[in-house]
Image 1 (tube, helix red, strand yellow):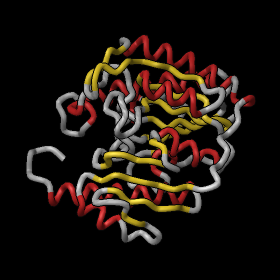
Image 2 (tube, rainbow, N blue to C red; image 1 turned 90 degrees about the horizontal axis):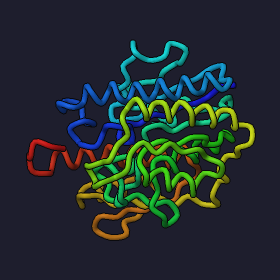
Image 3 (cartoon, one colour; image 1 turned 60 degrees about the vertical axis):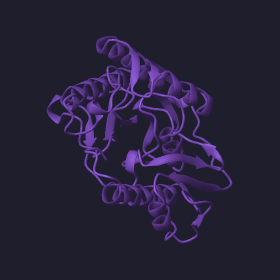
Image 4 (tube, rainbow, N blue to C red; image 1 turned 135 degrees about the horizontal axis):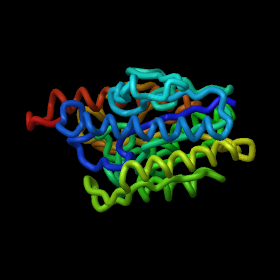
Length: 281
């Protein structure tokens, strides 16, 4: 059995602040260790439940956060960016189940460090509904008939996952006390929980079903800057709904991810070059 893991950082136990998740922050090296620890817990759980191969995709920021030499050597790792399928890169029909570790809530919604793909997006909607990164990546998994077996993170993303993914197992490792504040489990206890839940998800993989594909995919993104919205309309079929909001209907989840990746870059470029220099981006 092949198992796929996509790991983010914001939903990891012991992480709550921007200083921890941005490269260069004083807390970032410690956050790398915490992230790698939860990665290993998920890998260990998967192998304990019968996985023969595990592929883990580093899905946070620059996507080179995992400490390679500390990772369970039985797993293969994908790192670096950009990657065509972003947080779902490497996921394919050979995988029996996908596990999402360290995930977080959607832009504009409560949750620890909540956002959807970019801090420069104020909202991301699909077919008129706010979506998490997990829900978008689950559609890419569905293209290969791969179900979502596990989601770990704070109370908000776990609640969303339980409603969105039939049969999913969740591991709530912290509760949001604000956007950059959390009531968190001790990292060692969080790893124990993730190990247990990953094993359960892999053991139950044959009973899970991938998400059904929506009849249409209408992406709507709110940008921080009017300039970013202007650039975003260069995508064929995109239309500007108001000063900061752009909508685009796409043909499939791969194109959806392509547009999100492009708009992510547009928003980052616009912010870097046109926001006041506050020392943060």
